[in-house]
Image (cartoon, rainbow, N blue to C red; front, side, top):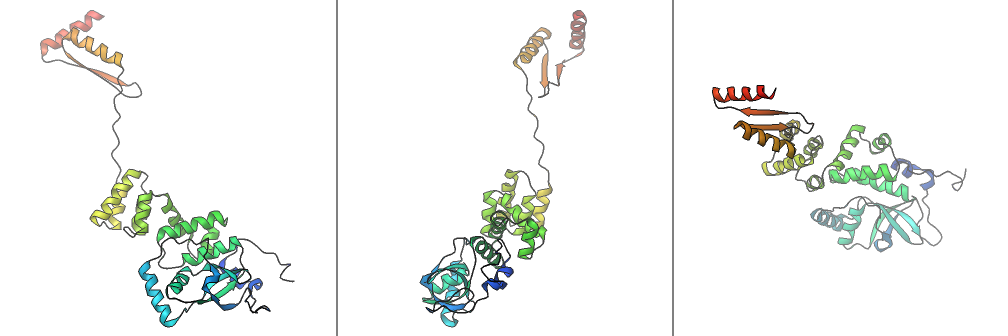
Length: 294
């Protein structure tokens, strides 16, 4: 079967793409430019950045350290690109290495050249970045969400592709339901994944933010946050809703009896009428008033 006649599936895993016979080509074309499958030195200026890059934060100190390492030892692990046309390439993965190489003043960089359509490229970039140790939990969660939505994966397929339990994937995705303030605190390292998982179990956003402040101010442990999360908020007392006509009638009765009359009523109309008497004489007068009414 020829390469042209082979069916190209969308949304395949990273291993399937890299091991596919369709990309296992190592020759160079007549003009000397490399084709898909080759490992080559490519001029950095000919490599476009990856529009699907899931990472948003790059630590400047870490980039400087990597840049110094590259100056001394070169780029050990090639970046991965796809060929876009004559002498034109687009980065699939390895943006930290590419940025650090530019900082180091390199003109060329070693690359793997692969074939990937946009969906495959997004999947490859996301999965490659998910496995980086310095990716924060929110970036991982966003990457998982993008794989589900943009590559049309189920959670079971996603967990298989990234090599994580389904429950682990689900826990990361739940972080995206937290208020923005909490997500920023996770991203910036003020709270841990354990703190965040405890906060997710709280349905009240205001309580989440109150506990978030306490975590930061009081350096609370995950165990302490879990205990706070289990505490039930005191039920709000239903405010009495007393119609104006009830108030007028209570005041009229109070004047007629010359006693303090109080009326209570809840939102469903249930209530009570309280008449306070000071002594036995007032009690007898109240009974007399009621009996006369009959």
